[in-house]
Length: 639
Image 1 (cartoon, rainbow, N blue to C red):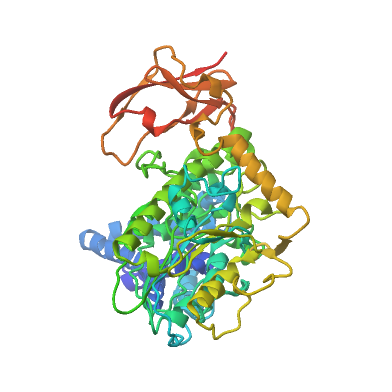
Image 2 (cartoon, helix red, strand yellow):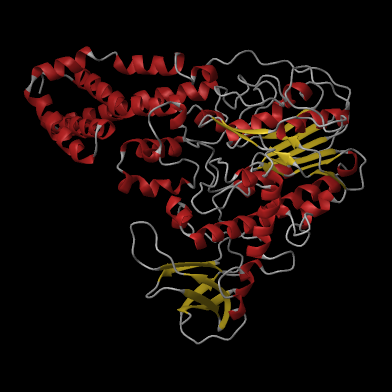
């Protein structure tokens, strides 16, 4: 054992670790630097993360081997060989598959023990971990975040009105509308309250399908540029640099870091768990890594992402979307204050964005401790009933987003800010619910769902609402806001104020930077298709006073008495969870009815998922049908 001193073994582990763990992670992060941008990671945190990925694993192994060596050198050597085998297997996973990984682990451990040349080669490769680290920090696309350009100094402005900008996520404008094209005041009373005293630019279109491009376009009024990340270094001229010298900034960015560190200092969230999930997606086979998909769409499964180019390997790496969205928004609202110095209050809220888990009350119907619902993955979008149900769940979650907006409006009134403030509410892009279409992958067949977004603007002192159907784009939001404030934007912008005469854009286009596609918004069929999209929503889910839970094949059964039986579900008073989604498998196919406490409350259709011949059901039931305490829920086929 003395022929292999601890230091030498440590170098060997470091090399194998860098090949098995560090470099695969660096490779993924290099191609997706949005991971750090979306988490607001400072240069110091990025460097600390890279150092930890490179050194912590080998250091831990070395410490364990040293402790084992105090008891027995033979035990320490056996442990070392086992670690070598595991790392060799991990390398096999990275470059091949699970079957070859096991072989690679066994052969790697055997070769390490038997052949001096293998150990010598690892010794020669000792600089590799530091080389990988240096390349990642100094040469990759992450380097722009590690060594950002100097912060842009804000210019003084004369405006004094408080400014509030709310950016919702995945919100097509027709989700808010009733059959007459106005805000549905029953389902969305707070959007309607805002619209009653604001100008609603009803024909506003997004410029991009993906948040890391769409949000910066709102904040700097420029078309997305392909290689630009959602960070201050790539967008140095923006609403924060414009107002930051004269305004106090109260900012909550969820999927970007456009506000420079010298202007905004926010505590970034932890992301070590996300890194572990990323690594699992990168190396584990699909059937093993699929449970990791429960990061609730914050991290897409990399196994299904094409590998031929960097940008095609884009992974949606927002913050963990699954938990804390309402709490983060409510903390933002609580942080709104008035003062002698004007303030900019800006929040990007990841609602009604997936995962769809919230009821209008804000309670969740996703069981605690679980990930995304199984029907939310791609197979669910191949089932007509599930596509429509996803739409229903989107609208229910939008009702909760409306409730949160109401809390913000109430806070502004409580502080006496509302009347004299400029308030803008917009969405970064829409979302589509159509059979055979990805919910966000822009296509000619779904642009009517993804392009149109709401844009409300209340000027200081404005009390009466107006509807303006001038064709705008989201790059026009900032110029319009600044025009209201009489503030000149000192950089060249692509957007134009809606207050100026004429049509801002002769040709509106929506871009998919990820897939290098551009789609014309103002085609001859666009307006008819927008109207058809609204009519489809009303046809599926009714209008205003209609019961959205009546969605289903047999609304005529709702309210009828039902036979006994079923299972008992206990609803805890005050719990944040309520079992409002009833799902499972059933013998037979066709229409199912769900009864709660002896009365039918909803209906649905059975379905099969891909590679699964079992008949399933998934039905949303009204939260109000469940009382505190025990409830009897029965599901049966309607013969």
